[in-house]
Length: 67
Image 1 (cartoon, rainbow, N blue to C red):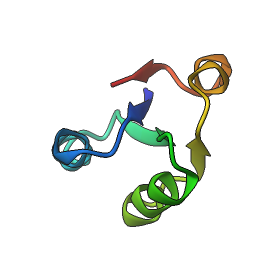
Image 2: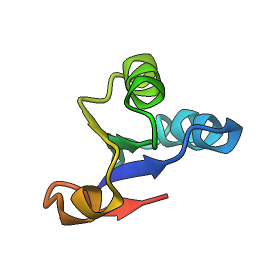
Image 3: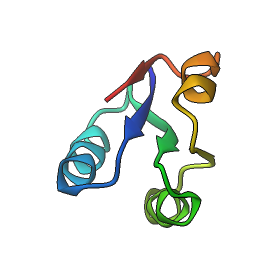
Image 4: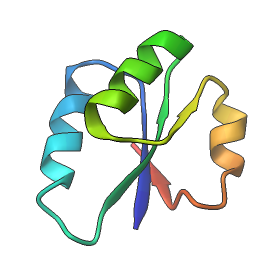
């Protein structure tokens, strides 16, 4: 299952670290209002996609769930 995170506060980091413990979860995208902040988070966790539009994130067929 591929997930995306919405935002960049501390809970996103905790979720990303916890998700690494599960082989069936893949971190597929980051949403942030700021491209720079989103890219920093994506770089930290090796995530390829960064969105600044919730609509674009919701339309991504590769994302199964958002947190």
